[in-house]
Amino acid sequence: MKPSILRQSPVAKRTLDTLRPRIIDRYLLREVAISFLAATAILLLVMVGGAVADLLSKIARGRIPADLLFTLIGLRAVGTLTILMPLAVLLGVLLAYGRLWRDSEMAVLQSSGLDLRGLLRPLLLFALPTMAAIGLISFWLGPASDRLAQQLMQEASRSLIVAGLEPGKFVDLPGRDGVIYVGEMSADGTQFKRMFIESERADKQAGKTRIDVITATHGFLYHDADGAGRYIALQDGFRVEGKLGEDDFRLMRFARNDIKLPDSASDDNAVADKRSAPTSVLLRARDDLVMRAELHWRLAAPLSVLVLTLLALPLSKSSPREPRYARLLIALLVWLIYYNALLLGRSWISQGKLAPEFGLWWVYVPALALAAWLLWGSQRLKRPRAAARTV
Image (cartoon, rainbow, N blue to C red; front, top):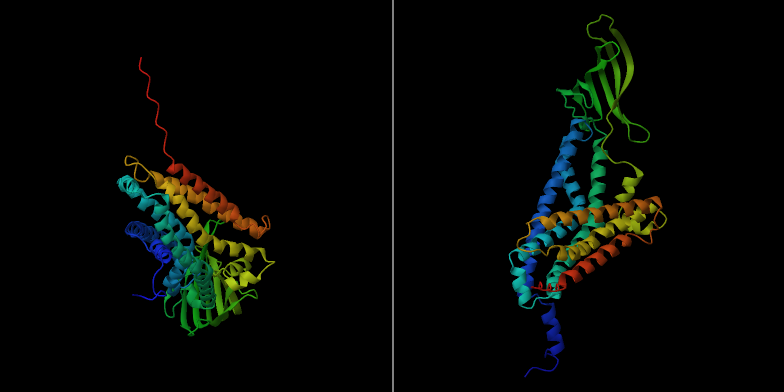
């Protein structure tokens, strides 16, 4: 006979049985998890495609180096997870439970005694770990990836390699018509020797093309005092300029001639730095409205998982004859309204139009109230229609 201290009391056994996932819980949890992962992969693929197009255009204009393409794509993907994952949760629950309703599996489960609490149980088992993961990304990984991306672009902007220059090759001028050639370049890309630049621009008044040819024996790259503007300092060279088809070309010799390069793609401004600041810095910033708004924005990502999960449950209820993706359009419209309300609240807090103490709760509370009303309405039994009177 076991000692009394080793015996399991009925209350403890009942509590343990309550916390242990049931077979139906594991089945529903698996369906939701598969739909969530599929929705996340598709949304991430769409976002990465847009990021690749944006980065390639900046590389073509000489604003960021081609070597940072895949690194910046990965860092951007981490930052977008705080937006994609709540939407993927909404779509995952909607698709998983919607399929069960259309295939009449949900009707069988409810006839077997599965009530609203039984439907919410696997969703909470799925939502709580997801909230923890999104909270980790929103408060730590996302801001860290933004800071690393800004640091990489700031370091790369101090090199001529950003403009796509390679020693011994003719390359297109970034941001204008023409070519540029560099004979030698230092390892860090800040100094060069034997540069040749040919540029063309249309003269609308004369209706002809103006051509400029510049040569220099050596030079270097430097920045403005604010660190934003980039210039190439050409030293000991010649410049020939004129219009094609005419003989009035002008030749000049210079000791130094500076040429402005396109601005770098780094978000080197105060607002971007504050929004990518560590969470510990945001917690200490009591008087900075931008940082207070950013703190509420980071908190919105994990809370949105719970809100959208509760909204998705009643929205997923459909009849077998209903179109497959009819409720999906409604869910996307709900998410757009919800997400734009969060963006509006973030803007209001940063501009001082809304007190930071209110935060974004004025968005969560109506959304939760709507979810509760939809859940209550979905569980109500419809009254039977009165039989038509026969004469």
